[in-house]
Length: 161
Image (cartoon, rainbow, N blue to C red; front, side):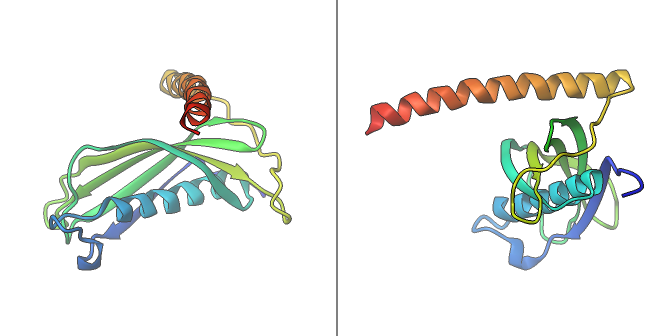
């Protein structure tokens, strides 16, 4: 691999088959697009096959309408030994107007794996700009919060049994 690509934007047209019962694009369709963009971003950075380990904090802030041009932007904001935290923004617009509006945001964690499915090392990403440093710190804070939530969920499961 000669160079890493840190970010990518995928574009889709929202189709009638993507509609939910309310007439808007189904959240599952948006989640599929998010997963595709996260994979493309992670593979571009690591140069390896990657799997989704976590998708969280998904916020659906505005509907996507059938016929909208949807842009799913993915960017590496933190790397571990084999994992990459990818920030995802989904924007949509009428293709005749091209006035993008944020519809969805989330963080996805992808893990690079080898031929037998075991985690494998990836290049480290080092933030350079103040904005990138803030994004990395945000990813670290979210990682710590997920650990606390995981511990609480484990305790909950024990109580539920």
